[in-house]
Length: 228
Image (cartoon, rainbow, N blue to C red; front, top):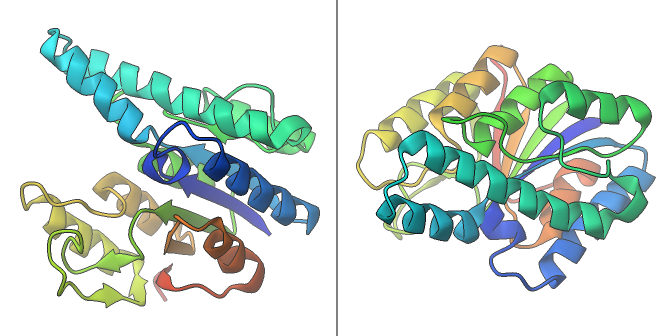
């Protein structure tokens, strides 16, 4: 099975301790050894937010802030590449074409951000579409898609199954509420809908959940299915 795994920066590198990165690398290697074709997309997490906040106070404009965030995602990507050793392409892919070529060589490509004004959520969905992935997995800091931000509302209800169009509607509603944190952004949801990519959203703080979602098709999260 060809799978793109999107690993949130706050999940992969909540700090610069190496243990979580090593655990994710071991998970990807296990899946690779089982015969799955993999690509990984890595977010910027708290390190990116710290840099962006500082740069904004120094007067950087929004495109410059996006470029700074992209640079941090690629630094996080280099951490994962280091842990994957010779199974990963040697540097973060800076385009979808480079990522696909790495897959064709038999390497695991690691991508960060690609262009300004696009999150790594959207990069993962677009890359999954580009390589005709069988499955897209979002490893986030929450346990799926909810009807509200579960970090703000402890009564928020999690959806176990959604169609792609239902996902778009839910994320659009959340993004219109100031300060709400959606598990994926609206552009990513629309790409998932357009491409018909089977997708799951899981709590990625334990990489075993990612392995189970791919290898066993068992997970405690939200499954997004293409339209019938």
